[in-house]
Image (cartoon, rainbow, N blue to C red; front, side, top):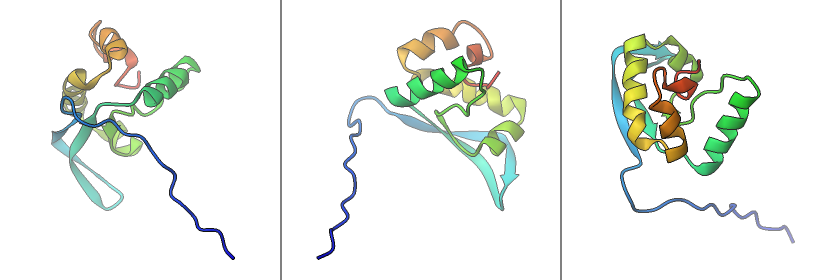
Length: 114
């Protein structure tokens, strides 16, 4: 008798303040046969923050987890659109990232990969 495969159970945040928004791009980006005209900006989990901070600590330039787009799209974006993302993400940042981001552009390296 074959064992039945069950989906792993996952926890998720429910309720509370809005956790995401769409940011329109002034300069759309084409990548992989798709034109990106907007980017989803979202609140991140504690685990995502931990992994992101660890990667920064290792000297890597990880893709900011709060932006839902391929790295290639993020890297190709016009700087004005990147600034719009940096500004839009502030309300969605956890307190420990928000304090660092508000210290000055470009979000203390938290969102612009610098």
